[in-house]
Image 1: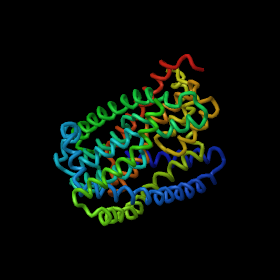
Image 2 (image 1 turned 180 degrees about the vertical axis):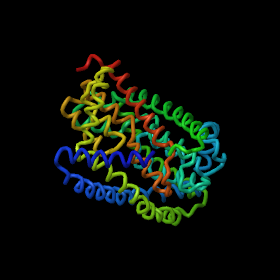
Image 3 (image 1 turned 120 degrees about the vertical axis):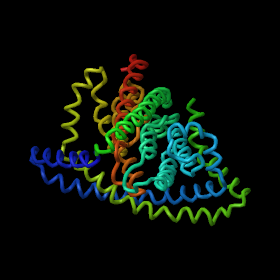
Image 4 (image 1 turned 90 degrees about the horizontal axis):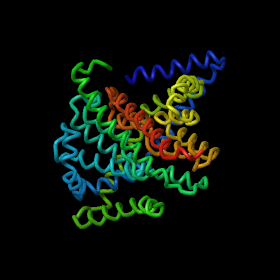
Length: 199
Length: 180
Protein backbone atom coordinates (compact mmCIF):
# COMPACT_ATOMS: atom_id res chain seq x y z
CA UNK A 1 0.00 0.00 0.00
CA UNK A 2 2.75 2.45 0.92
CA UNK A 3 4.27 1.79 -2.53
CA UNK A 4 1.13 2.93 -4.32
CA UNK A 5 0.60 5.98 -2.12
CA UNK A 6 4.19 7.07 -2.63
CA UNK A 7 4.09 6.44 -6.38
CA UNK A 8 0.69 8.13 -6.61
CA UNK A 9 1.82 11.32 -4.87
CA UNK A 10 4.90 11.70 -7.09
CA UNK A 11 3.15 10.79 -10.38
CA UNK A 12 0.19 13.06 -9.67
CA UNK A 13 2.62 15.81 -8.75
CA UNK A 14 4.61 15.45 -11.97
CA UNK A 15 1.47 15.28 -14.14
CA UNK A 16 -0.15 18.28 -12.46
CA UNK A 17 3.03 20.33 -12.70
CA UNK A 18 3.34 19.48 -16.43
CA UNK A 19 -0.34 20.32 -16.99
CA UNK A 20 0.14 23.70 -15.30
CA UNK A 21 3.21 24.30 -17.46
CA UNK A 22 5.57 24.58 -14.49
CA UNK A 23 7.48 21.30 -14.56
CA UNK A 24 10.58 22.93 -13.05
CA UNK A 25 8.72 23.06 -9.72
CA UNK A 26 9.11 19.29 -9.32
CA UNK A 27 12.91 19.28 -9.19
CA UNK A 28 12.97 22.18 -6.78
CA UNK A 29 10.34 20.61 -4.51
CA UNK A 30 12.16 17.27 -4.49
CA UNK A 31 15.45 18.81 -3.39
CA UNK A 32 13.78 21.05 -0.81
CA UNK A 33 11.86 18.07 0.55
CA UNK A 34 15.06 16.07 0.93
CA UNK A 35 16.65 19.01 2.71
CA UNK A 36 13.69 19.29 5.11
CA UNK A 37 13.90 15.56 5.86
CA UNK A 38 17.55 15.75 6.82
CA UNK A 39 17.02 18.89 8.92
CA UNK A 40 14.11 17.20 10.70
CA UNK A 41 16.15 14.08 11.41
CA UNK A 42 19.06 16.09 12.79
CA UNK A 43 16.83 18.24 14.98
CA UNK A 44 15.60 14.99 16.52
CA UNK A 45 19.08 14.09 17.77
CA UNK A 46 18.86 16.47 20.73
CA UNK A 47 15.48 15.39 22.13
CA UNK A 48 16.18 11.74 21.30
CA UNK A 49 19.49 11.72 23.17
CA UNK A 50 17.92 13.43 26.18
CA UNK A 51 14.89 11.17 26.44
CA UNK A 52 16.72 7.96 25.64
CA UNK A 53 19.05 8.80 28.52
CA UNK A 54 16.20 9.43 30.96
CA UNK A 55 14.32 6.35 29.79
CA UNK A 56 17.40 4.19 30.30
CA UNK A 57 17.47 5.28 33.95
CA UNK A 58 13.72 4.63 34.29
CA UNK A 59 14.25 1.17 32.84
CA UNK A 60 17.21 0.25 35.08
CA UNK A 61 15.34 1.53 38.14
CA UNK A 62 12.49 -0.85 37.32
CA UNK A 63 9.97 1.95 36.76
CA UNK A 64 9.02 0.78 33.29
CA UNK A 65 8.23 -2.66 34.69
CA UNK A 66 6.04 -1.27 37.50
CA UNK A 67 4.05 0.72 34.98
CA UNK A 68 3.67 -2.35 32.81
CA UNK A 69 2.17 -4.32 35.68
CA UNK A 70 -0.41 -1.60 36.34
CA UNK A 71 -1.95 -1.66 32.88
CA UNK A 72 -1.45 -5.35 32.15
CA UNK A 73 -5.12 -6.28 31.46
CA UNK A 74 -5.57 -3.54 28.87
CA UNK A 75 -2.31 -4.34 27.13
CA UNK A 76 -3.10 -8.06 27.00
CA UNK A 77 -6.34 -7.21 25.26
CA UNK A 78 -4.79 -4.91 22.65
CA UNK A 79 -1.42 -6.62 22.24
CA UNK A 80 -2.03 -10.36 22.68
CA UNK A 81 1.31 -11.20 21.02
CA UNK A 82 3.42 -9.24 23.55
CA UNK A 83 4.52 -11.26 26.64
CA UNK A 84 3.13 -9.73 29.82
CA UNK A 85 6.42 -8.69 31.40
CA UNK A 86 8.13 -7.53 28.23
CA UNK A 87 9.83 -4.11 28.37
CA UNK A 88 7.79 -3.08 25.30
CA UNK A 89 4.71 -2.79 27.53
CA UNK A 90 6.21 -0.08 29.75
CA UNK A 91 7.44 1.92 26.76
CA UNK A 92 4.03 1.68 25.04
CA UNK A 93 2.29 2.96 28.16
CA UNK A 94 4.71 5.86 28.63
CA UNK A 95 4.36 6.85 24.98
CA UNK A 96 0.56 6.85 25.11
CA UNK A 97 0.52 8.79 28.40
CA UNK A 98 2.80 11.46 26.93
CA UNK A 99 0.52 11.65 23.88
CA UNK A 100 -2.55 12.15 26.04
CA UNK A 101 -0.91 15.05 27.86
CA UNK A 102 0.11 16.65 24.57
CA UNK A 103 3.83 16.20 25.29
CA UNK A 104 4.86 15.46 21.70
CA UNK A 105 8.58 15.89 22.36
CA UNK A 106 8.54 13.20 25.02
CA UNK A 107 6.12 10.91 23.19
CA UNK A 108 8.30 10.36 20.11
CA UNK A 109 11.44 8.98 21.85
CA UNK A 110 9.31 6.71 24.03
CA UNK A 111 7.47 5.51 20.94
CA UNK A 112 10.76 4.69 19.24
CA UNK A 113 11.89 2.74 22.29
CA UNK A 114 8.62 0.80 22.16
CA UNK A 115 9.16 0.07 18.44
CA UNK A 116 12.66 -1.16 19.19
CA UNK A 117 11.29 -3.57 21.82
CA UNK A 118 8.47 -4.72 19.52
CA UNK A 119 11.01 -5.36 16.78
CA UNK A 120 12.77 -7.86 19.06
CA UNK A 121 9.54 -9.89 19.08
CA UNK A 122 9.03 -9.57 15.33
CA UNK A 123 9.73 -12.76 13.34
CA UNK A 124 10.06 -10.85 10.03
CA UNK A 125 12.35 -7.84 10.61
CA UNK A 126 11.42 -5.98 7.40
CA UNK A 127 7.66 -6.36 7.84
CA UNK A 128 5.39 -4.67 10.38
CA UNK A 129 4.10 -7.06 13.05
CA UNK A 130 0.48 -7.04 14.24
CA UNK A 131 1.52 -5.49 17.55
CA UNK A 132 3.33 -2.68 15.69
CA UNK A 133 0.29 -1.94 13.54
CA UNK A 134 -1.88 -1.72 16.68
CA UNK A 135 0.66 0.52 18.38
CA UNK A 136 0.85 2.88 15.41
CA UNK A 137 -2.91 3.02 15.04
CA UNK A 138 -3.17 4.06 18.71
CA UNK A 139 -0.37 6.55 18.22
CA UNK A 140 -1.83 8.35 15.23
CA UNK A 141 -5.21 8.64 16.97
CA UNK A 142 -4.61 8.85 20.68
CA UNK A 143 -7.05 10.39 23.16
CA UNK A 144 -5.80 13.92 23.85
CA UNK A 145 -6.61 15.45 27.22
CA UNK A 146 -4.49 18.54 26.73
CA UNK A 147 -3.88 19.81 23.18
CA UNK A 148 -1.12 22.11 24.43
CA UNK A 149 0.21 23.48 21.12
CA UNK A 150 -3.10 24.72 19.80
CA UNK A 151 -4.10 26.19 23.19
CA UNK A 152 -0.91 28.24 23.01
CA UNK A 153 -1.71 29.45 19.48
CA UNK A 154 -5.27 30.38 20.46
CA UNK A 155 -3.99 32.37 23.42
CA UNK A 156 -1.48 34.12 21.17
CA UNK A 157 -4.24 35.30 18.81
CA UNK A 158 -6.25 36.74 21.72
CA UNK A 159 -8.90 34.06 22.34
CA UNK A 160 -11.29 34.85 25.20
CA UNK A 161 -11.07 31.20 26.25
CA UNK A 162 -8.07 29.41 24.70
CA UNK A 163 -8.91 26.13 26.47
CA UNK A 164 -12.45 25.90 25.18
CA UNK A 165 -11.38 23.35 22.58
CA UNK A 166 -10.38 20.85 25.27
CA UNK A 167 -13.87 19.32 25.38
CA UNK A 168 -14.32 19.10 21.61
CA UNK A 169 -10.82 17.66 21.19
CA UNK A 170 -11.48 15.05 23.86
CA UNK A 171 -14.69 14.03 22.09
CA UNK A 172 -13.09 13.88 18.64
CA UNK A 173 -10.04 11.94 19.84
CA UNK A 174 -12.16 9.46 21.79
CA UNK A 175 -14.08 8.72 18.58
CA UNK A 176 -10.79 8.56 16.65
CA UNK A 177 -9.15 6.17 19.09
CA UNK A 178 -12.19 3.89 19.09
CA UNK A 179 -12.09 3.87 15.28
CA UNK A 180 -8.35 3.15 15.36
CA UNK A 181 -8.82 0.09 17.57
CA UNK A 182 -11.76 -1.21 15.52
CA UNK A 183 -10.01 -0.59 12.19
CA UNK A 184 -6.89 -2.31 13.48
CA UNK A 185 -8.85 -5.37 14.57
CA UNK A 186 -10.74 -5.42 11.26
CA UNK A 187 -7.70 -5.12 8.99
CA UNK A 188 -5.77 -7.61 11.12
CA UNK A 189 -8.45 -10.25 10.51
CA UNK A 190 -8.72 -9.33 6.85
CA UNK A 191 -4.98 -9.76 6.42
CA UNK A 192 -4.97 -13.08 8.20
CA UNK A 193 -7.70 -14.30 5.86
CA UNK A 194 -5.88 -13.13 2.77
CA UNK A 195 -2.54 -14.38 4.01
CA UNK A 196 -1.08 -10.87 3.92
CA UNK A 197 -1.10 -10.72 0.13
CA UNK A 198 -2.73 -7.30 -0.16
CA UNK A 199 0.41 -5.22 -0.11
CA UNK B 1 -9.67 25.49 33.73
CA UNK B 2 -6.91 27.10 31.69
CA UNK B 3 -4.69 27.51 34.75
CA UNK B 4 -5.04 23.83 35.65
CA UNK B 5 -4.24 22.77 32.10
CA UNK B 6 -1.23 24.99 31.69
CA UNK B 7 0.00 23.88 35.13
CA UNK B 8 -0.13 20.23 34.04
CA UNK B 9 1.72 20.97 30.77
CA UNK B 10 4.33 23.00 32.62
CA UNK B 11 4.90 20.57 35.51
CA UNK B 12 4.58 17.15 33.86
CA UNK B 13 8.13 16.87 32.50
CA UNK B 14 10.03 18.42 35.45
CA UNK B 15 8.11 16.18 37.88
CA UNK B 16 8.71 13.08 35.75
CA UNK B 17 12.41 13.94 35.43
CA UNK B 18 12.81 14.38 39.21
CA UNK B 19 10.90 11.19 39.98
CA UNK B 20 12.99 9.08 37.61
CA UNK B 21 16.29 10.44 38.97
CA UNK B 22 15.32 10.15 42.65
CA UNK B 23 13.85 6.66 42.33
CA UNK B 24 16.80 5.61 40.17
CA UNK B 25 19.26 6.78 42.82
CA UNK B 26 17.28 5.05 45.60
CA UNK B 27 17.38 1.84 43.57
CA UNK B 28 21.18 2.24 43.31
CA UNK B 29 21.27 3.03 39.58
CA UNK B 30 24.41 4.94 38.51
CA UNK B 31 22.28 7.75 37.12
CA UNK B 32 24.89 9.72 35.21
CA UNK B 33 26.55 6.74 33.56
CA UNK B 34 23.20 5.19 32.70
CA UNK B 35 21.96 8.44 31.17
CA UNK B 36 25.03 8.71 28.95
CA UNK B 37 24.72 5.08 27.88
CA UNK B 38 21.11 5.68 26.84
CA UNK B 39 21.71 9.04 25.19
CA UNK B 40 24.47 7.52 23.06
CA UNK B 41 21.87 5.85 20.83
CA UNK B 42 20.23 9.17 19.90
CA UNK B 43 22.54 9.98 17.03
CA UNK B 44 22.44 6.56 15.41
CA UNK B 45 18.67 6.52 15.54
CA UNK B 46 18.36 9.94 13.91
CA UNK B 47 20.74 8.94 11.11
CA UNK B 48 18.87 5.68 10.55
CA UNK B 49 15.56 7.40 9.83
CA UNK B 50 17.00 9.83 7.24
CA UNK B 51 16.35 7.67 4.11
CA UNK B 52 12.78 6.97 5.21
CA UNK B 53 12.06 10.63 5.92
CA UNK B 54 13.67 11.76 2.65
CA UNK B 55 11.47 9.37 0.66
CA UNK B 56 8.26 10.48 2.35
CA UNK B 57 8.90 14.22 2.57
CA UNK B 58 10.13 14.44 -1.05
CA UNK B 59 6.87 12.87 -2.29
CA UNK B 60 4.72 15.16 -0.11
CA UNK B 61 6.73 18.18 -1.16
CA UNK B 62 6.27 17.41 -4.90
CA UNK B 63 2.58 16.72 -4.33
CA UNK B 64 2.09 20.11 -2.68
CA UNK B 65 4.30 22.32 -4.82
CA UNK B 66 2.97 20.99 -8.13
CA UNK B 67 -0.60 21.97 -7.31
CA UNK B 68 -1.82 18.36 -7.10
CA UNK B 69 -2.85 19.03 -3.50
CA UNK B 70 -5.14 21.86 -4.66
CA UNK B 71 -6.66 19.55 -7.28
CA UNK B 72 -7.39 16.99 -4.57
CA UNK B 73 -8.95 19.66 -2.34
CA UNK B 74 -11.22 20.92 -5.12
CA UNK B 75 -12.28 17.33 -5.79
CA UNK B 76 -13.27 16.71 -2.16
CA UNK B 77 -14.94 20.07 -1.50
CA UNK B 78 -18.46 19.28 -2.91
CA UNK B 79 -18.65 16.39 -0.48
CA UNK B 80 -17.57 18.67 2.33
CA UNK B 81 -20.35 21.16 1.60
CA UNK B 82 -22.80 18.28 1.60
CA UNK B 83 -22.21 17.51 5.28
CA UNK B 84 -22.56 21.18 6.23
CA UNK B 85 -18.94 21.81 7.15
CA UNK B 86 -17.31 25.12 6.27
CA UNK B 87 -15.15 24.41 3.20
CA UNK B 88 -12.45 26.79 4.52
CA UNK B 89 -11.08 24.07 6.80
CA UNK B 90 -10.61 21.56 3.96
CA UNK B 91 -6.96 22.40 3.15
CA UNK B 92 -6.13 21.78 6.78
CA UNK B 93 -7.98 18.44 6.81
CA UNK B 94 -6.08 17.22 3.75
CA UNK B 95 -2.72 18.51 4.98
CA UNK B 96 -2.94 17.24 8.55
CA UNK B 97 -1.89 13.60 8.01
CA UNK B 98 0.86 14.58 5.56
CA UNK B 99 2.77 17.47 7.09
CA UNK B 100 2.64 18.59 10.71
CA UNK B 101 4.41 21.90 10.12
CA UNK B 102 2.27 22.86 7.13
CA UNK B 103 -0.97 21.94 8.94
CA UNK B 104 0.00 24.00 11.96
CA UNK B 105 0.80 26.90 9.62
CA UNK B 106 -2.63 26.65 7.98
CA UNK B 107 -4.33 26.44 11.39
CA UNK B 108 -2.53 29.52 12.71
CA UNK B 109 -3.33 31.46 9.54
CA UNK B 110 -7.03 30.59 9.77
CA UNK B 111 -7.20 31.42 13.46
CA UNK B 112 -5.62 34.77 12.74
CA UNK B 113 -7.97 35.48 9.83
CA UNK B 114 -11.28 34.30 11.29
CA UNK B 115 -10.52 34.82 14.98
CA UNK B 116 -9.82 32.09 17.54
CA UNK B 117 -13.39 32.13 18.90
CA UNK B 118 -15.22 31.96 15.56
CA UNK B 119 -16.82 28.72 14.33
CA UNK B 120 -13.98 28.17 11.85
CA UNK B 121 -11.40 29.07 14.50
CA UNK B 122 -12.79 26.58 17.00
CA UNK B 123 -13.19 23.89 14.35
CA UNK B 124 -9.68 24.20 12.99
CA UNK B 125 -8.29 24.27 16.55
CA UNK B 126 -10.12 21.06 17.36
CA UNK B 127 -8.91 19.44 14.14
CA UNK B 128 -5.33 20.50 14.82
CA UNK B 129 -5.43 19.30 18.42
CA UNK B 130 -7.07 15.98 17.78
CA UNK B 131 -5.04 14.24 15.07
CA UNK B 132 -1.42 13.61 14.46
CA UNK B 133 0.76 13.65 11.36
CA UNK B 134 0.02 10.03 10.47
CA UNK B 135 2.51 9.71 7.59
CA UNK B 136 5.34 11.26 9.59
CA UNK B 137 4.72 8.96 12.56
CA UNK B 138 4.54 5.86 10.36
CA UNK B 139 7.71 6.80 8.50
CA UNK B 140 9.59 7.69 11.66
CA UNK B 141 8.52 4.73 13.79
CA UNK B 142 8.90 2.08 11.10
CA UNK B 143 12.09 3.71 9.80
CA UNK B 144 13.73 3.60 13.23
CA UNK B 145 13.66 -0.22 13.20
CA UNK B 146 14.17 -0.64 9.45
CA UNK B 147 10.69 -1.86 8.54
CA UNK B 148 9.85 -1.32 4.87
CA UNK B 149 6.57 -3.25 4.59
CA UNK B 150 3.86 -1.33 6.45
CA UNK B 151 1.03 -3.83 5.80
CA UNK B 152 -2.30 -2.36 6.91
CA UNK B 153 -0.90 0.35 9.22
CA UNK B 154 -1.70 3.17 6.76
CA UNK B 155 -5.26 1.91 6.25
CA UNK B 156 -6.09 1.87 9.95
CA UNK B 157 -4.27 5.18 10.55
CA UNK B 158 -6.24 6.95 7.84
CA UNK B 159 -9.53 5.39 8.97
CA UNK B 160 -8.88 6.84 12.42
CA UNK B 161 -7.96 10.24 10.93
CA UNK B 162 -11.19 10.40 8.93
CA UNK B 163 -13.25 9.44 11.98
CA UNK B 164 -11.57 12.12 14.06
CA UNK B 165 -12.20 14.69 11.33
CA UNK B 166 -15.91 13.92 11.10
CA UNK B 167 -16.22 13.76 14.89
CA UNK B 168 -14.59 17.22 15.13
CA UNK B 169 -16.97 18.67 12.54
CA UNK B 170 -19.95 17.03 14.24
CA UNK B 171 -19.23 18.18 17.78
CA UNK B 172 -18.10 21.71 16.87
CA UNK B 173 -21.05 22.45 14.57
CA UNK B 174 -23.35 21.01 17.23
CA UNK B 175 -21.99 22.97 20.20
CA UNK B 176 -20.81 26.17 18.56
CA UNK B 177 -23.40 26.76 15.82
CA UNK B 178 -24.18 30.12 17.43
CA UNK B 179 -20.69 31.40 16.63
CA UNK B 180 -20.01 32.79 13.23
